[in-house]
Image 1: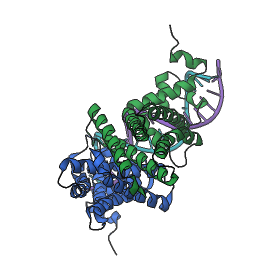
Image 2 (image 1 turned 135 degrees about the horizontal axis):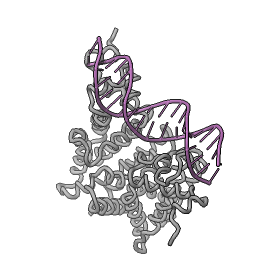
Image 3 (image 1 turned 90 degrees about the vertical axis):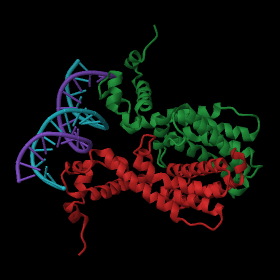
Image 4 (image 1 turned 135 degrees about the vertical axis):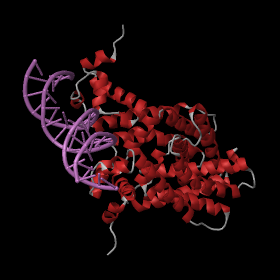
Length: 200
Length: 200
DNA sequence: GTCTATAACCAGATAGAC
DNA sequence: GTCTATCTGGTTATAGAC
């Protein structure tokens, strides 16, 4: 019979168990629904136990942010489009919006921790995301770095914006809303590419 | 000597004073920084007094949302561009991003209250915002309602997305970041217009 | 309409035993 | 490394007096 989480944290894995549990709580009830006390209760440990592994609540949340960032990187990297540079860029956008839709609370928690004064480790974890957009945009900009930067940023904004509208319910609810958001984001990306000469 | 707010709420304006104070608190410290208790303290009334005017915290926050929505409507309406339909649409985007930048905490609180199950009064207050985008997009779409809807939504997403990136610090901080966000959002809008044939 | 007082609750964090 | 126990401080919301 396999080792359960309950078994492991008494062998020194409480730290990892806390991160997992925090992510579960956030996914289920939002950042607001997470507290050190609730995480402790769910794991069956004393409320003081987490403080052996994290100096405070924010330190645990930062670690959650890093883990979520890694999931996001995987999402934008995994979604493979066609061979053309345009299709690769569209695929990154799709992956981004799909992740935002499928992990709303975690994604919002990640954004909340990504302040300008965020932990360097968080920035580092997020770098491949920006790179995914930037690399595909570069392939579309014929060696003009400024044009690539402008296109990449505009496309990130489009992805982020469609995620935001999805959260507001602009596209409805449920699976159909997800597909609408992904489809519209992809179409907007194509429009940006087609009209990229106007980006300055 | 003019009547102060302290004077007024003893004459029946505590309700209005609470809304004002809630907006101040949110603007200063974010939604998290607002509480019924803190608002009461700031106004010098008992913590129970607000409950004569609002059944609970959420009802007050909904009212704050309505007021913030009205400010947003004014912002997107006020920013006048040139005479062309394209410049009017760009102007709406500018107004939206500028408002998001200048009233971050209130704007985020507004978005948080704008769930699919929000108060109808909130939806009504926000309708002119959507209309501002939609009307300008319609003028650019030569009588094709579907094309107008697609363009309008893509442009709203662009505005929302640039606001989001601004909050993440992607454009830096301070006044220069604001101008970068507004400028990039305007350029992206022009690119979307130029490439709108790809929107489907 | 506002007050005083209070109930009921939950959080973050620490001290010291084991 | 985890536990028990506790401190400190905060919140929403209500009851009943004025």
